[in-house]
Image (cartoon, rainbow, N blue to C red; front, top):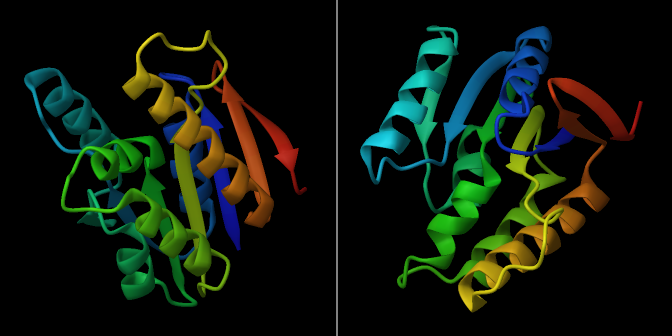
Length: 170
């Protein structure tokens, strides 16, 4: 089963995803896509680490997400990916990585994986259209990725103020 959890910054989406992973009763493998480029981001990463159960395995995967999912997925595992927009950012701005290839690999792999997958992502497309070309590209690619994943997902949630809203599935 594959779930997509969307929400804005500090919406409660990661906490909700972690609760769903805990409730799965499966071995949880936390796939972290963030990189600590500055002190503020390092603090955010540390905050997330402190709130995760210590028995969860953590795999840091800033770029090659589909390969990591394929490696760790098994019927008794719940793979929790947090978060897709950081992964998108990493792929878009790493000249050695082709974003379109990584996107296609993820879309081809996600629905076939054994076990359970919970993917978390920031919804960034509800504001005004950004002025800069790079920002517009990021928002556009994020929206396209979310649409494609939502069409494949068994369940889709949107979290606002800590309250999950079911968009797809039961």
